[in-house]
Amino acid sequence: MLYSLTVIVNFVFLVVAVWLGVYLVTRSPRSLVAWLTGLTLWSIAGLFLNLLLVLTPPPYLENSPDWAPLFLPFWPAGTLSSDRSLWLQGWLVIPAIAFWHHATTLLRPRKMNPWRWIRVLVAYVIVVVAILVFLYTPFMFSSVSGDPLYLNALKPGPLYSLFVGILIVFTVVCIFNLSYSAHATPFEMPRKQFLILAFATLVAGLTAPVGMVAAAFEITIPRVSLALLLGVAMVLIGFGVARYSALMEGRTMRRDFIYSAVSIGFVAFLYLGVTWVSVQVFNVPAVAYIFLVIGAIISHTVIDISRRKLDSFYFHNKERDLRLNLRRLSSIVGEQDQEENLALALDMMCSSVRATYGMILLFEADNLRQIAAYRWHAGVASLSPTDLVADDVLHLELGQLPYPFVEAVLLIPLYIEIEQIGAIVFGIPENGTRYSIADVEQLLYPSDKIADVLQGALPEEVISLSYSGQISVEVVADALRNMYDFAYLGDISLAELKLIHSRIPDGSVTHLDRGKAVYSIIGEALEKLRPETVYPGELAPREWHPYLILHGAYIKDRPNRDIMSQLYISEGTFNRTRRSAIQSVTRVLQEMEAVLS
Image (cartoon, rainbow, N blue to C red; front, side):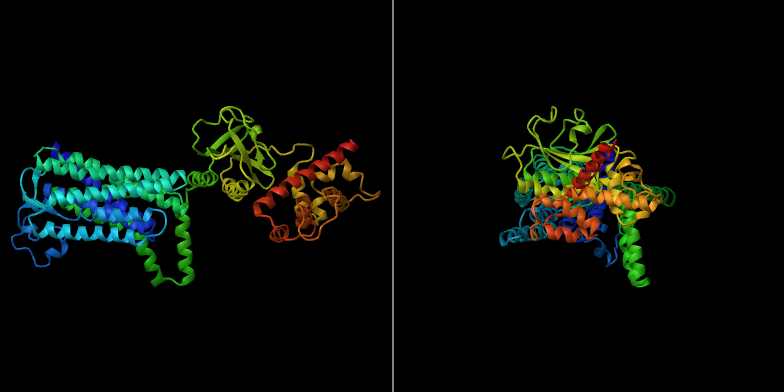
């Protein structure tokens, strides 16, 4: 039972290590951290591979060919023709700590300095020395004896404890690097990934001293127990770096990760079946399981890279671009869930202004749906959409929202055109009681971008909480966009108002006459936004902005970017001011209609 369990556990983690490493480098091919982590995982996989080769060794070759060592660079010379226990002395796992130390050093804030480079180079030099000692002297392991299922099979040599001590030192340095990075980052999500990586590093680093103690005192600890610890730590490291890379690159990975894991699992299972038939029917050595499945994983995960390279030989530039775009499109099919990106955006917004908590809320009929949250776990059941209706940024008083939102002090509405679809709520800042104007300005642009992202995730019926009178804001906005199309204006619902009919000259009965009257009335309502002060001509004060935006956009038909440049305002401020101005015009029309009624 112990033999079977050891083989299964090591085989599974070997497969996972190879796949995770290839997944990292194919998803982030330009990231040095991803490559170093992939090398770390492949190096750790050597430990699982060594044990599998000891338990399921290839057949002995008394006269191995001269080229055989070229395919066995990680084991001592003569392994194929000597005692099978030599498979346990493969050195592939030794460089893992140097690769991971290099990766964690790169993850620290600020650029690499000479002192960091010296530490990285020292780690690589120690690794090279350890490999040479391991291969050509008895100072690392003096003898190999006992059952390979237990940790005391290898007898430590005089230098073994020295190298284990160095390994512990570099493990501590890696944990310090990751902890320092977690402390330095202002963002919650990367901080969690750094702490998970630090914990995984601690677990992986403990396996070496435990093995040393077991070998020194001849304690019969099954190897499978440490393989489980090391395997779990390896998975946490691989997944943590993959998630961190996705966060830094602004992409989601959950579905892609699951899809890759399921597809590679299916391929591995298929090749396992083929290998089992070969072993049972054709007497193929059982070691074929290992290399055939590893080869299948590598070949299937890098096939897309090979396809892209071949495209450059067989297709012209336009065809290559088309194929590349199609592959990108297929990679995001099904990625309708943008929760990870929204959570990261909210994380960065809250961290930048030091908010105690924050949340993105979406209106759904009479309810709210929490899309993302930052340091908030209490739910939103006590809130309703009517609590969050706002024309523009709203500074809240403490206790203005119901419990447990009593410390919410800032509300930024999310709009698509003139329709409020939700809101972002921020708790009290850590270093004060209110958010400054600079803080609010910093939050406006990403808030508008979040609204754009949410536009594709809206349910079929989104609540409309704008000004609700006989004249809708949507109709007025539509009329403004078609101000010079009299035929169109004559057929919209505004043309049926008493206000419009009262302005149509006697004998004018066509839809064009109604359209001209609609044009006149909207122009009149828009002019009421014009301040009574004299227009300054250069830098217009804030009270002129609503009028200038609507007049410039819909009467003069000026591009939005020109209006923003004239008023020195951002795109977010422009959109909010225009939205508020359209609502004001709508209310003016409603009041003018009410006089006649």
